[in-house]
Image (cartoon, rainbow, N blue to C red; front, side, top):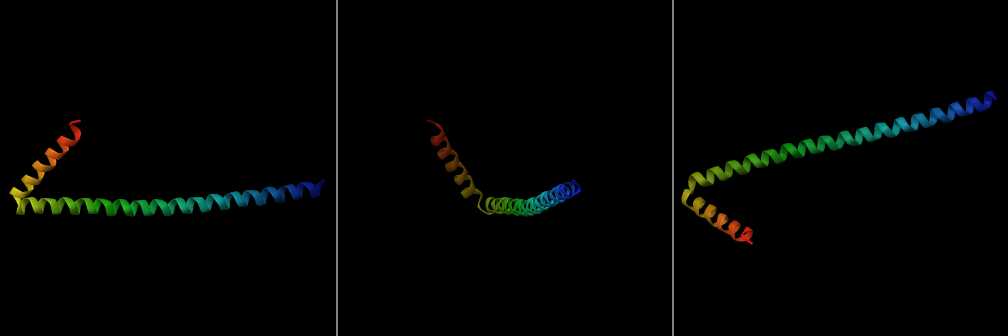
Length: 83
């Protein structure tokens, strides 16, 4: 009876340790992905700010062309969404 209990306890301990190992690995992977997404999010925000800055500079340097582009884009959008 003692051998059976000891064997059962050992099996439970091994299974418990395996479960802990799996949870630790999953947590590490999840943390790694979270860091990557955070970095990519920061890069995308920086790209957005760069594009806005470039667009502002273009409009300041070429106001007539920027107005023409905006009117053409508005007209095309109107034609596309009209139907």
